Image (tube, rainbow, N blue to C red; front, side, top):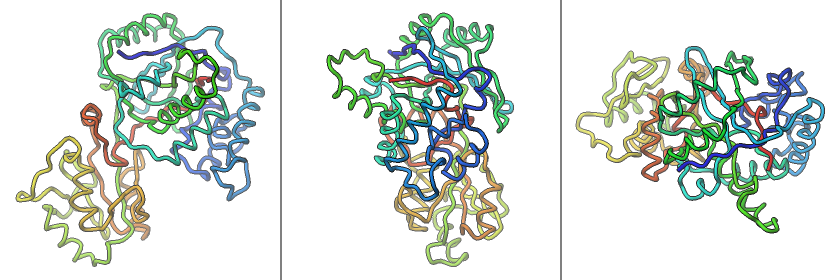
Length: 408
């Protein structure tokens, strides 16, 4: 049973929503965030990446940064000004990018269900990133960006969504990246709460660190609380929940800085020991079980050699796993992609032209273009209680921070 809960959203006025709404904190670095927020005092990046308002070189995990987040948040609420809903509610959040459209339910979800794996995970989190968002939540007393959840689609919920969308939208704007964001207030929240009770499981698509940090923040606030009941707002985390059929995963490609001491020909010969290598390949593999490789100005197509042992298992058979276990580790010496500085990742819309640019400019020696992980693979891995390799999925389009805030 999926427990969802209406919440009293803290939100910007309609006339400033597009100025406030910002990309997620973790898809931009400090320089990119500063550029995006330049000239816009209402950008939520001043709250989610407050180091942009501090001197260059400021430690992004310093006390000064979290104090700046709190002061910027309070200032934004007052100057914009934000409003708080009179009664708890739910919202629909539609995102349109080109021909792609997806519609999710914005609600609060149970941290107990997260802790008990009824909200399933597929990614291992990093402690330093958890520390950062936990402190951010505690200093703001708020969750300011939603966790991106999915579930196996149900027709009765789809029908309810269509009915709700007939009404007027609360927000409707197109961001500077040409992605359209539309939010409706749900007039009949109880219907949705009851409908989701028949959904057996929710799955984290994106936002593992936000969810883990909400759990850690809850533990700290619970310890500080007198007379904890389990009904406090800190027992729930902000999420937008999309049906699996609507989601789109884009490739999460790899670039490696050097050939591990080999010449081009030596490297190709090593690769040919494990893969069938075809010259003049396509930049994007057409099917699962195929990879494209960019080396010295040319694309090659890769496929496991016919006599090579075939991968077995939900995780081992993922394309990202096969590439890691058969090529990146044994040939290029990339043992741990989380810590090895010789590998970088290029996700989403940046595409294969970015791979070519990095290699052609000498910033990488070789690049690999992958067929995207499927949503069904994500669900199967999650159901098996397994963990995907790092950087396995890139969801697009992204939700915006600052539009619907859950205070804890």
